[in-house]
Picture 1 (cartoon, rainbow, N blue to C red):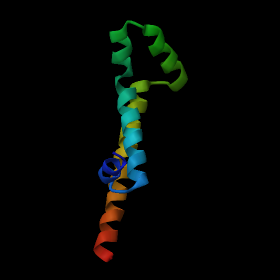
Picture 2: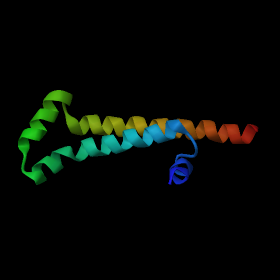
Picture 3: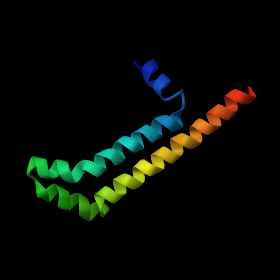
Picture 4: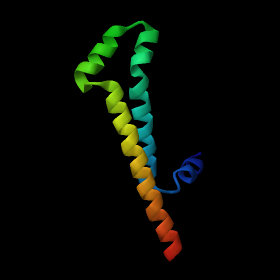
Length: 83
């Protein structure tokens, strides 16, 4: 199983970390909807007081993750072309 995870991440820790950030960002983007579905608006208020605007934070995390993955893929491609 670890070999499959490494293959998906192209044997790059940077890409694996970016996937973690993307997952966390996606979760943060939908936390409001999840809190409403669970019927616990107090959770949403607690998270908002700790982080601020949760949807914006989630979207920023997703953008950071995408930029990091694209940058790493560019360096991997350059490395393959040179060597």
